[in-house]
Amino acid sequence: MCARQRETTEIRQQQITDAALHIIGSKGIHGATIAEIAAEVGISEGNIYRHFRNKEEILKSVIEKIGEDLCRILTSVQDTSDPVQRMGEIFQRHLALAAGNKGIPRTLFSEEVMVIQESLREEIKNRLTIYFKGISEIIRQGQKRGSILPQLKAEALTSMFIGTINFTVIRWTLSNFQLDMEEEGHVLWETFLKAIEQSPPLVPVR
Image (cartoon, rainbow, N blue to C red; front, side):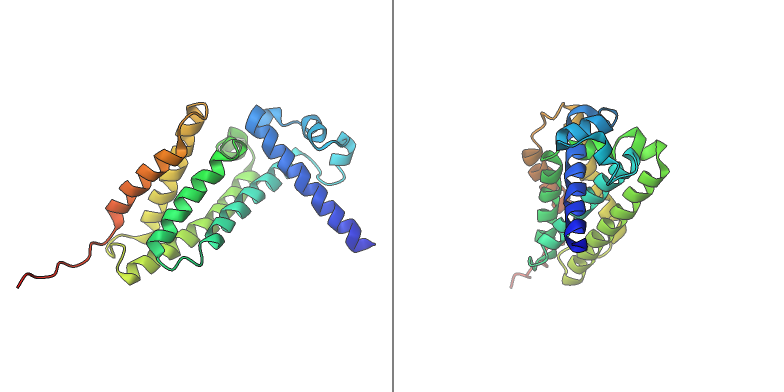
């Protein structure tokens, strides 16, 4: 009975988290009130407080979900042996993740999360640190294999990699979500690749 109750609680928490992210996508952080979230899930406001103490806890759960989705992207490309190809897949899948849910940029880049709520800011920092380390490790693997320029610092390349994605998502948001992120992503990745890829050695002509 206890295990069954716990599973029900986890499912309800996931429903509340998904509802909050969906509402943030259409109405922003401030529009995602407890009343709106409860209505989206189809439960009473009182029922919300059985699973989360307050809105801050719900937002923390939203950030956790985003972080888990990013980690799943890293996991999803593990079977791709070529590090450069793996980076390209991550680049496109990260953009596709954001394009599939407007709530992601409206959560991560909001003032309430980035400035006002320290606990939420720390949660983003912790989640991105895990993602950052994963990308850096792939870059180092590419450098060891000779496909990525070895003189470039892996951490700096990771910052450029993630920064390019984030700025593209910001541009998409500012365009009222009209920017074609798939097309933009292909152009940006090809440009980024040319800057980091190690050219094969020239074969001397005899």
